[in-house]
Length: 472
Image (cartoon, rainbow, N blue to C red; front, side):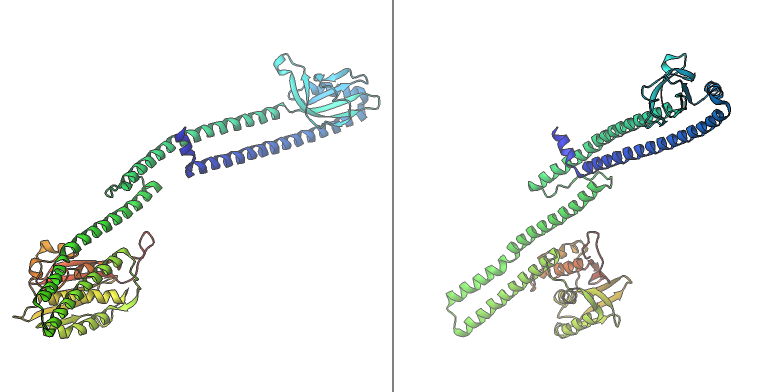
């Protein structure tokens, strides 16, 4: 009973019930309308036939009198498929015709009968004696009565057959609807039970659980697929949050410990005013680096979560890259590196000017930090190309590069190669670039430049709409 109540609470079942009721009502109205219309047509035809026969009998009466009328009626009543004929005297005694008995009161009033009446026909088979008919009664001057009618039993049987067929059809349709509800409803309830069980496990904390998908492609599967995508996104964000928390606890412990050590050493040594100033400047530099690290973490989190205010418009990537290269050229010269740009004169795309500039800056800054060497002139090249619907930014260097098995790892937050831990930085530069690529619907890939490293940022030129209605 509980499952039946749960089934009746389903919108699909309620809609099916409403559709069934509407169909049944329309079918009943249509059948009764067709039946009534057909019956009316048959009755009109019968009354027209009665009027024609009365006109013929009136002509016979004028020419042959009572005797000729009785003889004509007696002859017609014996013909196959004859109409209903009856002639009575003034006392109601039957003189001629094919009627043995008549419903009382039919001959009382002259004119057409308003409703069908019952009569008995002369017949050997008792089961076929009783019929219904409509007729018209004519009074003669001598008190005799003449009745001419048409049998209506077939019409009555037709209405009965139609009504019986309608009742049977509605019963079968209702039974079919109940059977369909039973099987479809049970299947739907089993799927809902599966979704409920999976949801309970997810609420219990198992974010690896996914809602069942049968592959039928119906609304349940579409809902499950969308929710599974959402769960995967939540699981990814939760894993990222856990990873960030672990990395912060691990990687920021060293600068915090260094700050504390410097402060304790300064207090223990009782430095002069000049020495204290140098210590404070070092502490401020360490604090600034930590603040930059936290700012980078905050920006990555906002961009990946979609809460960062990304104002996209038509921008010229070539112009932005030229500005960033001009900004870093003095730093490259100081580091003993050459920085060149290869780009078309103009390349219009849809994106965030601030984030695109941030991504180019991070890639150039990484190349200067980890590829430049004092004993040789490092070459850093920024190349922008137009790929039709997508555009490509590649920052290449001829430095030591990164082993291929570490390409994916260096995109993780705070991950740094052993040889780069002695250099300033937080290990968040490539993570931020990857987040910027994702918010623009693009990707970040590391390639071996042999020698050196090429970091490729590829993104669509125009803003697209994803399947869930969001911007890609």
